[in-house]
Length: 343
Image 1 (cartoon, rainbow, N blue to C red):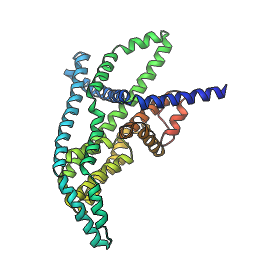
Image 2 (spheres, helix red, strand yellow):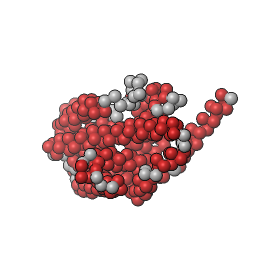
Image 3 (cartoon, helix red, strand yellow):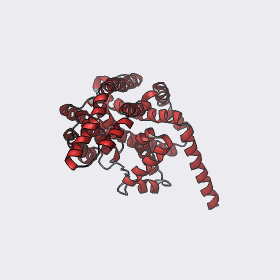
């Protein structure tokens, strides 16, 4: 019996992986729609606290909250597109600075890097690097129609769901238990997404002013990249700091601006990640660093860079859900950072 159960679980896992690989064009927009739905719910909760808005019908508040989120995303995409054009126009300068940096290293350390740097400059296409980086970011939001369609159905389903839940569990005691469980999961996931978005926005916002002060080209693009990668704990902040630092060196043809970016943006990441974020999130569930690496690798293999960006939010949601059920609770504890979860 135990062997049959293990084989069944193994087959289910294999099926899930295969579905994730071949149906990623459907699943990824759906996950984005769920994340946006939670953000809309958070915006609604904030708007309801305002007296004159709280008296309005729920559908108007939902519509307004949705328009606020869509407006923010549209503005972000427009600004990023403009910044990408700025970067594209300065690419020849970046390529020329590769040789300049190689000469500085050669003079400083007496290492003959000229030939290597020359070959590197020929082989390295900064246009393709920026293009792939930008396409990965916009690819998450590129299929806007599908995401909006999923989001629309989620919003339409939201007011009907309590009725369905009541019909599914006619027994009053059982219904109350399940309702509390659903509310708790909803509250935990909503809090995580809202607070993580807030701290990521703060990091991106402060980094923008730092990059603007240093004089980095396209600071809005780099700030947005920092905002997105901040959803990946530890690794994301390191990558988000390294990217603008490298391009700062290429832009100015000197190492000093790169060191400035590493120092200032790194300090912002350190303060927000180690002091502000833990204070806001309190005792909310954290993921083990080992689990972060494993989920990055697994989702990266399945969905590429898009999977790496979504890996931690997906894992956090799964851990929160698993923590609410006795059968899967030990797995949630195993995957957590401190070995404890909220009661």
